[in-house]
Length: 149
Image (cartoon, rainbow, N blue to C red; front, top):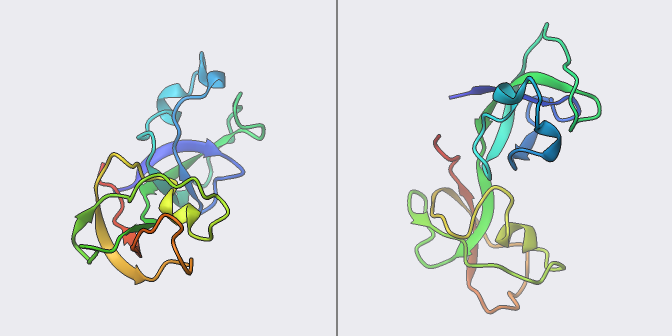
């Protein structure tokens, strides 16, 4: 189900994905707080519609202001332990990875997923982009289902 929120005009484009990180220091005292700060922290969202015929509002955080958009939780692509990685199962991330130069790093530490949570696998995508995991993990690339709010 989509949710109405305010988003920086540079991000306010259909199909744009972002992770909501919560309130910034510039939000204090803003008259639009209740419309802007209405998403769940740490969740990845996708803009499904930019509201037409709405005005751009001034914002202390976004230099070009904010616009009204509809968003929905988005799926997250991640690497998970291969054991039990099949569509419909629940799993968690393997754990933090300090190897930022690895081609799989952004999948092992994906935006919009937390190491303390479990996620339902929507689809198994196959082998990760790395040839060998330097942490000796057997990993499979999957698509987590969007979080339900």
